[in-house]
Structure formats: C-alpha cells, structure tokens
Figure 1: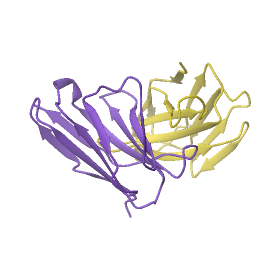
Figure 2: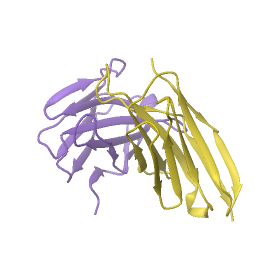
Figure 3: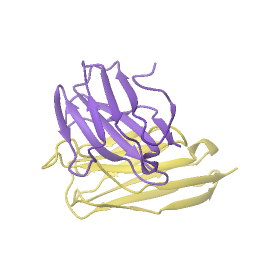
Figure 4: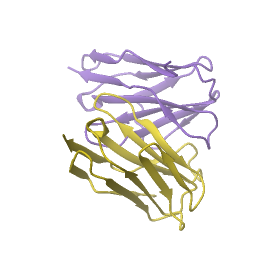
Length: 112
Length: 113
C-alpha cells in the first residue's frame, strides 16, 4: 500500500499560471519535505514542515510556497511558474527530523 | 557546505556481474542512506546505516558505513536487469540545517542481459 502519495503524477501548466501539487501520507510522520529534482540531478530540498513549523531553505525562491493543513497533507504552491521550474517534485516524510526519509513517487511538472 | 562525492557516475555491466559504488564526504555524517530511483519515480530506500562500521545487507545488496564516518559503499551482487536505475547515496549529520539530507550526484547503472 502506498504510504506517501503524490497527486497528480503529471501536471502541465502555463507560464505564469499558479499551480498546486499535493502530497499525503498514511504514516503519521511528523516531518514532511518538498524537493525539486531536475533531469540527471540529485533532489534539492526546498523546505520542510516539522509538525506545523515551516522551515525554508535559504536558496528557495519566493515563488515557492507550502501549506500543511493537517498531519496527513502538505501542498506545494508555485505562484508564477517559469520555464526553469519544470522538474520532478518529490515529497518525502520522516517520523522525526533525525529519522529516515521516505519518498513519494513524484509529480512531473511541465511548464508551457 | 558539505558535499558528497559519489562514484562512479555511470556503470555499464553484464547481467550476473557484481557492482560496487561509493560515496565520500569532506565532513562527518551520522547517517548514510542508499536510495534507488527508477525513471519517472521517486527514490526508494534500499539501506539505512546509523553507526560507524555498520555493515548491512538487503538481499543482494550490501552497504557499509565507513569507520571514519566520511564514506560509505554499496555493493550489488549478481546483477539482474531490474537493477537498472540511478543509485543515490545521502548523508546527514542533523547538525546546523535541520532536515537536510546531502545527496550524491547519483550512479546510473545499466545492465546488459
């Protein structure tokens, strides 16, 4: 059974049109992460939530925002997608900040 | 900042051969993780290592946490076609920047039947 679920798996948006990606988890983990992964590169951490506390990486553009309305769900909002934001977006969870991270299947974002 | 050097960058092997890849760091880690990523999918955890010197197996996979805490290797024995994918090492000291996993650049494995 899938434990970290991402919807949709593929998302196409237009340049400048806001888009929201969704992640949910059945693990009841405290921490949820969002990563951006471009082709042939390693995942790059954008931000994470520890419970309701939001932790932004210093180099994450302001264009990227996140919401975590409850333990199970976390959203990635891209306010004005540019062509350079086309990538795979990965959600991950961990029980605590020092525990192993488990990844979802990812959402492939295309920006036209 | 911390960096991980993962090698080799890519490997082309014959089915049945053994595979070895490794990661080294300029600084100490408390945790080493090995993930496999298939095209269009998220990384899947293969092995997690939490103690210096630890040697852990998962089927045909074996990984070790280096005694200096600055390196780790992953071995795959008797490779099969479904081993194809990109293997990432990741380390963390859970130090200054909470939640940060430092990833290697990946090893792309191709297996010829």
